[in-house]
Image (cartoon, rainbow, N blue to C red; front, side, top):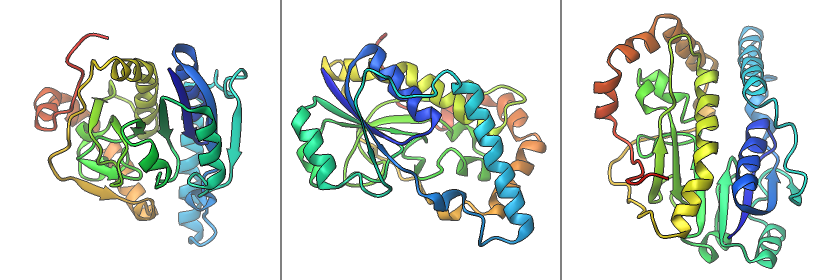
Length: 267
Protein backbone atom coordinates (compact mmCIF):
# COMPACT_ATOMS: atom_id res chain seq x y z
CA UNK A 1 0.00 0.00 0.00
CA UNK A 2 1.62 3.20 -1.24
CA UNK A 3 0.97 6.51 0.52
CA UNK A 4 1.68 10.13 -0.45
CA UNK A 5 1.52 12.71 2.35
CA UNK A 6 0.59 16.31 1.54
CA UNK A 7 1.45 18.45 4.55
CA UNK A 8 3.43 21.46 5.81
CA UNK A 9 6.82 22.02 7.43
CA UNK A 10 6.50 22.23 11.23
CA UNK A 11 7.58 19.65 13.79
CA UNK A 12 4.03 18.31 14.08
CA UNK A 13 3.96 17.63 10.35
CA UNK A 14 7.30 15.83 10.53
CA UNK A 15 5.96 13.75 13.41
CA UNK A 16 2.94 12.60 11.39
CA UNK A 17 5.22 11.76 8.46
CA UNK A 18 7.41 9.66 10.76
CA UNK A 19 4.42 7.70 12.07
CA UNK A 20 3.21 6.95 8.54
CA UNK A 21 6.70 5.93 7.37
CA UNK A 22 7.11 3.59 10.32
CA UNK A 23 4.04 1.49 9.56
CA UNK A 24 3.21 2.11 5.88
CA UNK A 25 4.97 2.58 2.55
CA UNK A 26 5.32 6.36 2.51
CA UNK A 27 6.44 7.02 -1.05
CA UNK A 28 6.59 10.83 -0.98
CA UNK A 29 6.13 13.84 1.29
CA UNK A 30 4.90 17.01 -0.40
CA UNK A 31 5.25 20.07 1.81
CA UNK A 32 3.39 23.31 1.22
CA UNK A 33 4.77 26.41 2.91
CA UNK A 34 2.42 28.04 5.40
CA UNK A 35 1.17 31.56 4.85
CA UNK A 36 3.23 34.12 6.75
CA UNK A 37 0.03 36.12 7.33
CA UNK A 38 -1.02 33.82 10.18
CA UNK A 39 1.72 35.13 12.48
CA UNK A 40 2.06 38.61 10.95
CA UNK A 41 1.66 41.29 13.62
CA UNK A 42 2.74 44.34 11.60
CA UNK A 43 -0.81 45.67 11.26
CA UNK A 44 -1.65 45.30 14.95
CA UNK A 45 -1.38 47.83 17.73
CA UNK A 46 1.79 47.48 19.79
CA UNK A 47 0.03 45.84 22.74
CA UNK A 48 -1.82 43.39 20.52
CA UNK A 49 1.31 42.59 18.51
CA UNK A 50 3.20 41.76 21.70
CA UNK A 51 0.37 39.55 22.96
CA UNK A 52 0.03 37.62 19.68
CA UNK A 53 3.79 37.18 19.44
CA UNK A 54 3.83 35.73 22.97
CA UNK A 55 0.99 33.39 22.01
CA UNK A 56 2.91 31.96 19.07
CA UNK A 57 6.12 31.65 21.07
CA UNK A 58 4.22 29.59 23.64
CA UNK A 59 2.79 27.44 20.87
CA UNK A 60 6.25 26.84 19.42
CA UNK A 61 7.68 25.94 22.84
CA UNK A 62 4.95 23.40 23.41
CA UNK A 63 5.39 21.90 19.95
CA UNK A 64 9.15 21.65 20.51
CA UNK A 65 8.55 19.85 23.80
CA UNK A 66 6.17 17.27 22.32
CA UNK A 67 7.94 16.70 19.00
CA UNK A 68 11.60 17.52 19.71
CA UNK A 69 12.65 14.14 18.30
CA UNK A 70 11.21 14.98 14.87
CA UNK A 71 13.44 17.73 13.54
CA UNK A 72 13.44 16.31 10.00
CA UNK A 73 11.18 14.38 7.71
CA UNK A 74 12.07 10.67 7.33
CA UNK A 75 15.37 10.67 5.45
CA UNK A 76 14.48 7.63 3.37
CA UNK A 77 11.34 9.32 1.95
CA UNK A 78 11.65 11.74 -1.02
CA UNK A 79 10.32 15.24 -0.43
CA UNK A 80 8.86 17.83 -2.78
CA UNK A 81 8.79 21.39 -1.40
CA UNK A 82 6.13 23.74 -2.73
CA UNK A 83 5.29 27.40 -2.02
CA UNK A 84 2.09 28.52 -0.30
CA UNK A 85 -1.16 27.88 -2.21
CA UNK A 86 0.49 25.58 -4.77
CA UNK A 87 -0.80 22.24 -3.53
CA UNK A 88 -3.30 22.06 -6.41
CA UNK A 89 -0.73 22.85 -9.09
CA UNK A 90 -0.07 20.73 -12.15
CA UNK A 91 3.40 19.98 -10.80
CA UNK A 92 1.95 18.34 -7.71
CA UNK A 93 -0.62 16.39 -9.68
CA UNK A 94 1.96 15.12 -12.18
CA UNK A 95 4.32 13.95 -9.44
CA UNK A 96 1.52 12.25 -7.53
CA UNK A 97 0.17 10.57 -10.66
CA UNK A 98 3.61 9.22 -11.52
CA UNK A 99 3.69 7.32 -8.23
CA UNK A 100 0.21 5.79 -8.57
CA UNK A 101 -0.48 5.90 -4.82
CA UNK A 102 -3.22 3.93 -3.12
CA UNK A 103 -4.03 6.81 -0.77
CA UNK A 104 -3.25 10.49 -0.34
CA UNK A 105 -3.07 11.77 3.24
CA UNK A 106 -3.65 15.45 3.97
CA UNK A 107 -2.48 17.29 7.07
CA UNK A 108 -2.12 21.06 7.22
CA UNK A 109 -2.26 22.04 3.54
CA UNK A 110 -4.48 24.39 1.61
CA UNK A 111 -7.84 22.96 0.56
CA UNK A 112 -7.46 20.20 -2.04
CA UNK A 113 -9.47 20.84 -5.20
CA UNK A 114 -10.03 19.29 -8.63
CA UNK A 115 -8.44 17.71 -10.58
CA UNK A 116 -6.62 15.98 -7.70
CA UNK A 117 -9.77 15.71 -5.60
CA UNK A 118 -11.79 14.20 -8.44
CA UNK A 119 -9.16 11.71 -9.60
CA UNK A 120 -8.47 10.33 -6.13
CA UNK A 121 -12.02 10.54 -4.79
CA UNK A 122 -12.53 8.05 -1.98
CA UNK A 123 -8.77 7.68 -1.53
CA UNK A 124 -7.91 11.05 0.02
CA UNK A 125 -7.74 10.92 3.81
CA UNK A 126 -7.77 14.21 5.69
CA UNK A 127 -6.46 14.64 9.22
CA UNK A 128 -8.60 17.47 10.58
CA UNK A 129 -7.56 18.94 13.91
CA UNK A 130 -11.06 19.49 15.18
CA UNK A 131 -14.21 17.49 15.72
CA UNK A 132 -16.47 17.58 12.68
CA UNK A 133 -19.26 18.43 12.33
CA UNK A 134 -19.12 20.49 15.53
CA UNK A 135 -16.22 22.66 14.31
CA UNK A 136 -15.07 22.81 10.69
CA UNK A 137 -12.55 25.00 8.89
CA UNK A 138 -9.49 26.55 10.54
CA UNK A 139 -8.32 26.91 14.15
CA UNK A 140 -10.97 24.39 15.13
CA UNK A 141 -9.16 23.37 18.31
CA UNK A 142 -9.14 26.99 19.45
CA UNK A 143 -12.71 28.13 18.86
CA UNK A 144 -14.35 25.50 21.13
CA UNK A 145 -12.82 27.22 24.16
CA UNK A 146 -14.51 30.47 23.17
CA UNK A 147 -17.84 28.66 23.54
CA UNK A 148 -16.84 26.83 26.75
CA UNK A 149 -16.71 23.50 24.92
CA UNK A 150 -13.42 21.69 25.65
CA UNK A 151 -15.41 18.54 24.89
CA UNK A 152 -15.33 19.60 21.22
CA UNK A 153 -11.53 19.59 20.98
CA UNK A 154 -10.04 16.62 19.15
CA UNK A 155 -9.21 15.17 15.75
CA UNK A 156 -11.23 13.79 12.86
CA UNK A 157 -9.84 11.39 10.27
CA UNK A 158 -12.18 11.53 7.28
CA UNK A 159 -12.39 11.15 3.53
CA UNK A 160 -11.93 14.47 1.73
CA UNK A 161 -14.78 15.92 -0.33
CA UNK A 162 -15.42 19.23 -2.05
CA UNK A 163 -17.00 20.61 1.14
CA UNK A 164 -14.49 21.56 3.82
CA UNK A 165 -14.16 18.97 6.62
CA UNK A 166 -17.50 17.47 5.60
CA UNK A 167 -16.46 14.05 4.28
CA UNK A 168 -17.44 10.66 5.71
CA UNK A 169 -15.69 10.01 9.03
CA UNK A 170 -13.33 7.08 9.56
CA UNK A 171 -12.36 7.79 13.16
CA UNK A 172 -12.38 10.53 15.78
CA UNK A 173 -10.65 11.04 19.09
CA UNK A 174 -10.57 13.42 22.02
CA UNK A 175 -7.30 14.16 23.86
CA UNK A 176 -6.65 13.08 27.42
CA UNK A 177 -7.07 16.49 29.02
CA UNK A 178 -5.66 16.96 32.50
CA UNK A 179 -5.90 19.70 35.08
CA UNK A 180 -3.17 22.25 34.38
CA UNK A 181 -3.11 21.71 30.61
CA UNK A 182 -3.08 24.86 28.49
CA UNK A 183 -4.50 25.16 25.00
CA UNK A 184 -1.13 24.45 23.36
CA UNK A 185 -0.45 21.27 25.31
CA UNK A 186 -3.96 20.01 24.65
CA UNK A 187 -3.50 20.65 20.94
CA UNK A 188 -0.21 18.77 20.83
CA UNK A 189 -1.60 15.91 22.90
CA UNK A 190 -4.26 15.59 20.22
CA UNK A 191 -1.66 15.38 17.46
CA UNK A 192 0.44 12.90 19.45
CA UNK A 193 -2.52 10.54 19.92
CA UNK A 194 -3.67 10.92 16.34
CA UNK A 195 -0.25 10.12 14.88
CA UNK A 196 -0.24 6.80 16.68
CA UNK A 197 -3.60 5.71 15.33
CA UNK A 198 -3.61 7.25 11.83
CA UNK A 199 -1.56 4.47 10.14
CA UNK A 200 -3.79 1.83 11.74
CA UNK A 201 -6.92 3.57 10.47
CA UNK A 202 -5.50 3.68 6.94
CA UNK A 203 -4.63 -0.03 7.12
CA UNK A 204 -8.12 -0.85 8.36
CA UNK A 205 -9.67 1.20 5.55
CA UNK A 206 -7.58 -0.63 2.93
CA UNK A 207 -8.72 -3.95 4.41
CA UNK A 208 -12.36 -2.82 4.33
CA UNK A 209 -12.68 -3.07 8.10
CA UNK A 210 -14.04 0.48 8.39
CA UNK A 211 -17.31 1.79 7.02
CA UNK A 212 -17.02 5.56 6.72
CA UNK A 213 -19.93 7.33 8.41
CA UNK A 214 -21.62 10.30 6.80
CA UNK A 215 -21.77 13.51 8.80
CA UNK A 216 -25.35 14.48 9.47
CA UNK A 217 -25.50 17.37 11.95
CA UNK A 218 -24.52 21.00 11.42
CA UNK A 219 -21.74 22.78 13.29
CA UNK A 220 -19.70 25.97 13.25
CA UNK A 221 -17.48 27.09 10.36
CA UNK A 222 -14.27 28.62 11.71
CA UNK A 223 -11.80 30.95 10.00
CA UNK A 224 -8.24 31.96 10.85
CA UNK A 225 -9.04 35.62 10.29
CA UNK A 226 -11.49 35.50 13.19
CA UNK A 227 -8.74 34.52 15.64
CA UNK A 228 -8.25 38.08 16.84
CA UNK A 229 -6.17 39.27 19.81
CA UNK A 230 -9.41 39.91 21.70
CA UNK A 231 -10.62 36.36 21.05
CA UNK A 232 -7.31 34.90 22.22
CA UNK A 233 -7.36 37.05 25.37
CA UNK A 234 -10.86 35.82 26.11
CA UNK A 235 -9.77 32.20 25.71
CA UNK A 236 -6.69 32.62 27.90
CA UNK A 237 -8.92 34.19 30.56
CA UNK A 238 -11.26 31.21 30.42
CA UNK A 239 -8.34 28.88 31.12
CA UNK A 240 -7.25 31.07 34.04
CA UNK A 241 -10.81 31.12 35.40
CA UNK A 242 -11.02 27.33 35.58
CA UNK A 243 -12.77 26.29 32.37
CA UNK A 244 -10.81 23.03 32.21
CA UNK A 245 -11.46 22.26 35.87
CA UNK A 246 -15.20 22.70 35.34
CA UNK A 247 -15.14 20.53 32.24
CA UNK A 248 -13.28 17.71 34.00
CA UNK A 249 -15.87 17.72 36.80
CA UNK A 250 -18.60 16.96 34.25
CA UNK A 251 -16.48 15.23 31.61
CA UNK A 252 -18.53 12.07 31.22
CA UNK A 253 -21.88 13.80 30.78
CA UNK A 254 -20.50 16.59 28.59
CA UNK A 255 -18.67 14.14 26.32
CA UNK A 256 -21.91 12.19 25.86
CA UNK A 257 -23.64 15.37 24.71
CA UNK A 258 -20.98 15.76 21.98
CA UNK A 259 -20.41 12.16 20.85
CA UNK A 260 -17.72 11.18 18.37
CA UNK A 261 -17.32 8.39 15.84
CA UNK A 262 -14.96 5.74 17.15
CA UNK A 263 -13.82 2.44 15.67
CA UNK A 264 -16.18 -0.46 16.31
CA UNK A 265 -13.33 -2.98 16.47
CA UNK A 266 -9.94 -3.34 18.12
CA UNK A 267 -6.99 -2.34 15.95
